[in-house]
Length: 107
Image 1 (tube, helix red, strand yellow):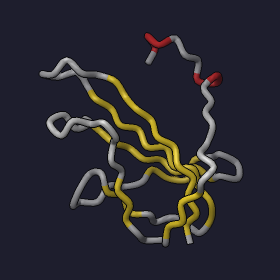
Image 2 (cartoon, helix red, strand yellow):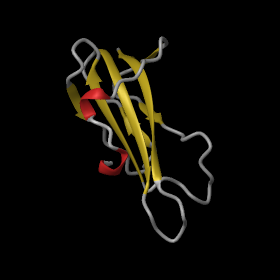
Image 3 (cartoon, one colour):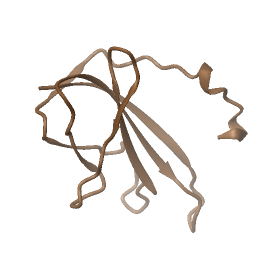
C-alpha cells in the first residue's frame, strides 16, 4: 500500500443505494466476480461498520465450512459491509486486491 501513495484520509467511495435485508444469524456468501477458479483469492475479509456513524462494528468470521461464507451475528440495524479479497505474490504472477461495498439491514 505505501507504494500506491494514497493517503487514507483521502480515500472515499459512494455506497450502493440498495439495501440488502438479512435475518440475524443467517449465512451470506461472497463470490468475487471474475475470479478464475484456479486462482481464488489468498484471503477474503469482511468488516461491518455502523451505517449511522461509520465506526467499526465487527470483523465477520468465516464459517468452518467455507471461507467465503460468513455468519451475520450482528444486532438489528443498518451496517456497511466492506469485503476485501487479496491475492498475495506466489507461484503465479498475480497480486492485488479488490474491495466490494454493501449496505445491509439486519433484522
